[in-house]
Length: 120
Image (cartoon, rainbow, N blue to C red; front, side, top):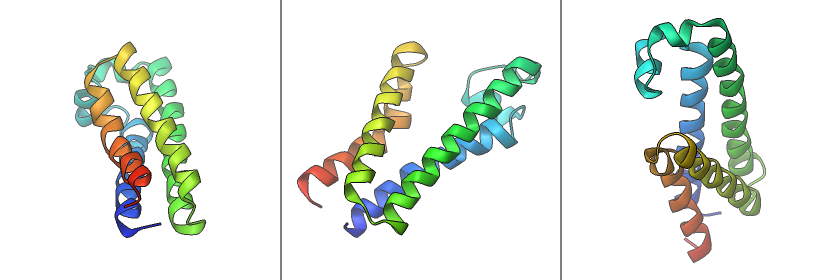
């Protein structure tokens, strides 16, 4: 796996870990409210808070899997599968929530997929 693909994949993983941080550890912060276009009061609701924390753990695990694929297993096929997953989730988020999500969450993953396909 090339250095370029490792860097791009790591950027995607960092994004997932950042989402983990926002959703699980900074759930009710001003920053989280701004990122998810919610009020802090809404984020403080027990049901919303619990759902975000749970979702954050999933995002963190995806970030961890990406890092494992890159650095522990050096597996380009595994990384490609995770990038496809990321793009599909971004498309779903774009359709159901906000179209900006497609590029914000899926943009670097799309670039990583292209890099893998053209053999960078």
